[in-house]
Image: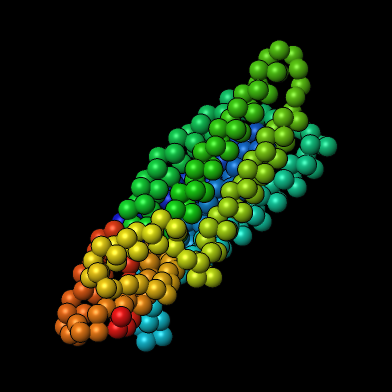
Length: 290
């Protein structure tokens, strides 16, 4: 039976596959480069969903002899791969749109294309909302990246729909503005590029063992200070994140008259308190005499 993360990734795969087929058919029938660019965008979303599906399954594999710290960073690797794929797709979309901008061709079946884009926006809005909720609850980088893809797809689908509507209104008024189709496709490509760069930075930082946020580090310090005896202290705090797991280690100064059992009890209290405030925290404490 699939867990919540895997089930959410599977739902994304199913929805993207359906939308790709619909967009490609309508894009070919209408000759709209913006609809075809959206089909390519969904194709990248599908590939990203497949990567996310594999990543969340691999990340849940328990630590072993070769990976004693677990497999959580697989989610970060998947986020980086997804971002690179989106950058490639956005570049191709912009190139094709610029070519068609200088060689415009009529767009047919505007009403059908408009309805398909609205349907795509609605489906992706529902699926991305579900993915984002699961990503927040499970602290999953891979699902968060997938949700971001679909959220962008909602906006770009609405943009394409408005572009097709503008072409239809202009035609109804007796004007030919087919170039708008290429302009919308270029805007879609630029938006996707911005999305991919942000995702690349967010996913890549944990691979370099970037520290936790200032708020999370301060939370750790506050918890330790509350549970320490008066003569105790903390230094050499180090933090990093691997997938959804937070690694925290520090040196703890305790009175030299304290027994090993008493020191161990304080460390246990600190570890439990940190884990309650920072989910999936792995805490390593080195005790030193004050």
